[in-house]
Amino acid sequence: MATKTDYELHEETALKYPKKYKVYLLNDDYTSMEFVVDILMTIFHKSYEEAEAIMLEVHKHERGLCGVYTYEIAETKVMQVTRRAKESAFPLKATMEEE
Image (cartoon, rainbow, N blue to C red; front, top):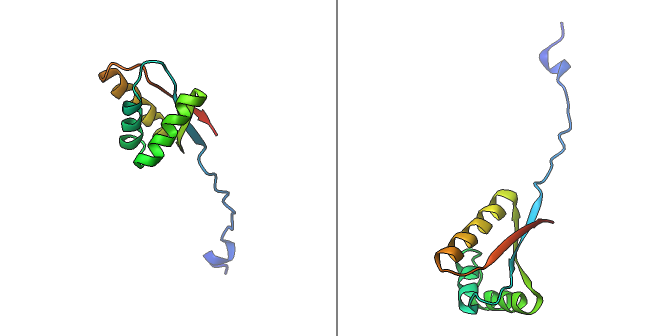
């Protein structure tokens, strides 16, 4: 008589890693540099030095990379930037792109 272990299935499970999304801040002529640094430190958890470097990237190259996240986290960060900018009467925009 066959036992349960004689017929066990051995399946290989392929793990798929979630897609990642890059979040960028976009340059504009009205948002203050201090506000951008504050956003980078509070929403993206950057040190002051990192935030200042990204802010200068945004200023010089029209956009700056804030981080790479899963879809839900990237979407949340874009919404947080939009909400804080609107509350502070700045036109700062954040976008996300698939990596």
